[in-house]
Length: 103
Image: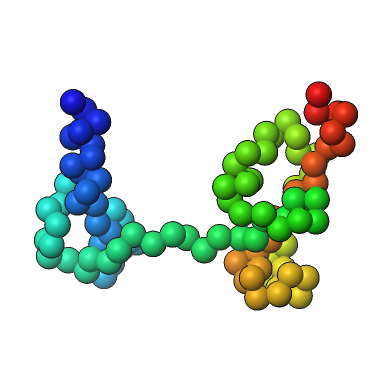
């Protein structure tokens, strides 16, 4: 029963941005209530690069932390200079351990 109740709350989830505070999500407001209501938006996402290959967040989720040898972060103009406009939100460079080391 509880999961069904949670679905009801999720169906009416909204974000509001009061003039004096950071955006917040209200789960108990009925749809269409007053306030500066906007749709829920994803945060800007960095570009993920694993062993030189660009991957998406779904592919990243399949990598075990035990497989990772090193992580580097590129920000701003450094990321854009290396990977172009698609790295405008930064780039996460992941180097995996050699396959034999993860077994």
